[in-house]
Every structure is written in structure tokens, then in C-alpha cells.
Image 1 (cartoon, rainbow, N blue to C red):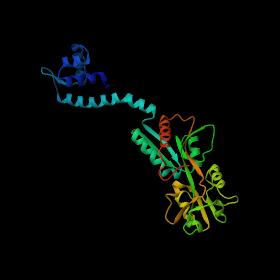
Image 2: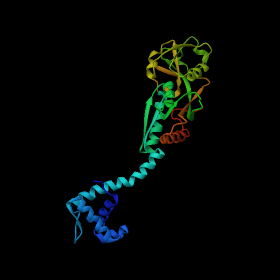
Image 3: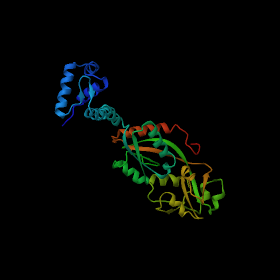
Image 4: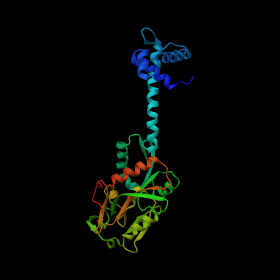
Length: 296
């Protein structure tokens, strides 16, 4: 049988007030009407919820009231939960990100979401930038954290911060002991760069190096790329990655440090309310200092 929430409230009120007249006064209804409706409910259920004179809950009534309280609480919360969902304050937002965002940007966004919107879940996925760009187009992601994402009419973005580019070399490389270098110092070494990087990222990296820099293609993602470093090769990464490099490698700064932005990017046609909250969090985080170094 279906259960009327109004009747549940009537029964709970009688239990709480200790009598039909006091419950009627509390509910602002006529006492005879209240008694008739609870009596009809008892006949439908085939049990007595109350003893009369004095009014007290029966064993069945106690079970009914206990369950009714839970149902009424959920019903009262339903409207708030629905409005929260419309504001994006609950549910899941799907965030794709590059590996370099794993060290600071992603943890900060997830932590801020947890503190400010406890019912919002940030689902994170690490991927190549090219896959991330494709992912916001196909709505696999609600937003992405990446660098050198192409500027397209359908994309909106907010820059979280700028990050310095550094060179990472093996400890066996001749430049591993220098404090700063000029692009020309890398002449004769080969740049490890994956074809899976966005063309915009490749162009950015090559622009900071000497003309004619030799590129050695690698398909090895993330940390495993550093395993390919030799005395003749080098990688160009953000300082965030350089500060978290594996043993056996050295990060060397440029004498004139170039920088790149870390952007939160989303599709303009995205309808995810939670994405709006993520954008607001990213805007707030960009005003906080970047942990490991000063920004340019």
C-alpha cells in the first residue's frame, strides 16, 4: 500500500505530543478530524498504533513511528538535495589532467572541493593532453587540467598559474653539475619528446631551445620517460615535475626561465552544474601561492 506522508506526520505528532488534542493543536487541525484519519490508517494497516485513555504507542506503533521519522527526514531533505544537485554541490565532476598536475593542482582542487562542497565527488583521470582535448569534446570529461591546449571557439578556460620550464638530465650528463644553462648549451644533446604531445606543446618546448635541436621521439609516458635519459639526451618539463624527479636525474634551470600556463579547460556547451563549481574553485586557487617556487 502507498503511505501518505501527511498521515505519517500526524502519527509522529501524536507520539511526540503525548495525546491527540495536543497533536491537533500543534498541527493546527481539528482534533476529531485527526482522530478519524489515524483511526482509518489503523484499520487499513490492521493494527492499533495507539492505546487510548491514556494515549500511548503500541509495539506496532513504535515500529511505525521509528520508520516514519526516517522517511520524513529524507522527504524533508529531498528538496534541499535536489536544489544542491542543480547547483552542482553534489554528484560527480569528471576531471582529466596531465601528469604534472598530479603533484599540486589536482590535490588542491580535490581538497578545496572536499572542504567547501562535501557532497561533490571529483573523479580524476590522468592522460595525455591530446586524449584530454578529445575527452572534453566527447564529454568524457567535464573539464581538463592541461598545458598548451589549443584555443578553439568551443573551449573556455581559466589559468590556474604559470610554471617555469626546466631541463632534466641524467646525472651522467655533462650539464648535470651546472646551475643555469643557455639553450645553446644543449647543442649536441637530443631532446626526448613524445609524438603524442599536442603540437602546441611541442612548439612551446622547441621555441625555448636552440634552432636545429635534434628530437628523439619517445612514446614513454610520465616518469618512465626519465628512464630513457642518457649522457646524450635531455627532457624539458615544468618545474613542478622537475622538483619531483626520480633519483639519478638532475633538474637544471634556464638562465632566462621560460614559463607555461596550467589551464582548466572546458567545453562551452557543457551543462554540468558541478563543472561551474570546479571553475570557481580553480579561480580561487590561482590566487594562492604555487607551493614549490615563485611564479612568473
